[in-house]
Image (cartoon, rainbow, N blue to C red; front, side, top):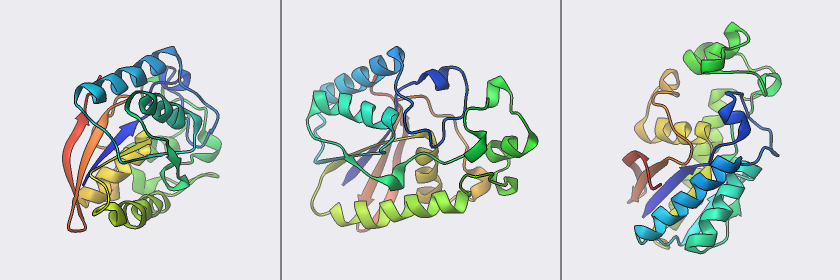
Length: 202
């Protein structure tokens, strides 16, 4: 079985370099809609049909999944386990290019083992729920499906790579991921492998 983990399209907060986290209502901006439409077209050109489609329940991810499904077929199934990392009081604050507001949230992205959540999630908590999705949602589909689409968030895609490659949490954020990039994961005999990272179907 092959699983396509798709990051959602761009939002206004992406463009402004603001931490979105568990903000459920942030939607795609005009560019994000175009990106999702381009991915849908790319999947069609590649002849991809998905036996099942999952999405984070957060609007930016679900809207992306709905746009893709309009072009390839299927109906997204929402799953809380693939929601974005909750950053608590830091949500809405700047990150990376825009500059962090304090050293603690900087550590969240540059030295995760030192990060202390303030109303948000720890990295072990995030990895545990994503692992649960991999083990108890996807693994049982191995003999039932050939291709599965999972539309989620940057943090979730990083968690998937961390788990599949067996990386230490200190390497959680290695590699930048553009909006609407795709990580292709293989599942065979109950084991996941990373087949391609940051595939671009646009």
